Length: 288
Image (cartoon, rainbow, N blue to C red; front, side):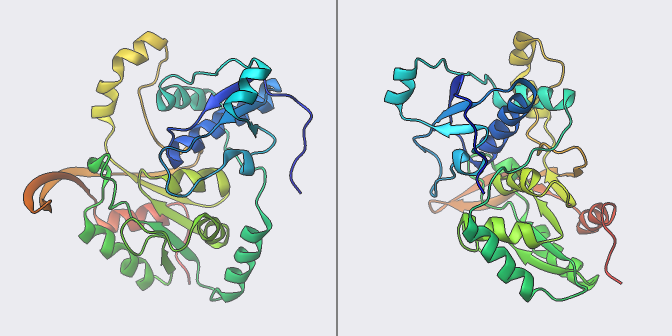
């Protein structure tokens, strides 16, 4: 059942420009404020970024209610400006290291998860991987494809059942319903600095998660002036918001790619497959 609340929103948040990971950070922070301060928030969501709309009000109905611009204006709601989202949320999380959670899942997600669960091979833990190989807005976060491709067979050799969330670049295996259902059924998740990593952190905080992320130094320097201006202690970070996250840092390199028919140097992140395997094994045992 959807959680019901009579608490009216005290402010609104404009999430129209937020990608999937940003929405999860926004949801974590707003949920903490609801639990700690009893607040609730209206959402303005014109969805400028996502090909498929991801409604926070659907999955977090106790924390959010969706409203139009006219309704927000009529209710005279102030806007909760979250400033530099990842800078402020990183510092909020450091003070309250609690995992968030989805407040509601539609029946079709739960039904699909049950179908997948019945098809699982007994005794073979399933590792769900989202390869970060298609982030044009921040290429330094991309995994080098040869490393990404070598990881599934290495885990399969140890007895894991491995499933790629994006077997083709820029394409999930189905939409959000399929993604959430696969996450509910899998036993562990490996991903980069990408939306599904942040979704898993809130949806399945009880399961092992490995984050293969770039070094954050460049971003830390970029937003240092805002850190000082805001008076917060910790530098910018975009790590998933869960306390027991297992982390592996990419090393930066460059490679040639063809873009619009011309060769270009692009930054890319590399990792050793054995390091990724060992990071997973540090939080869950291999099958026997």
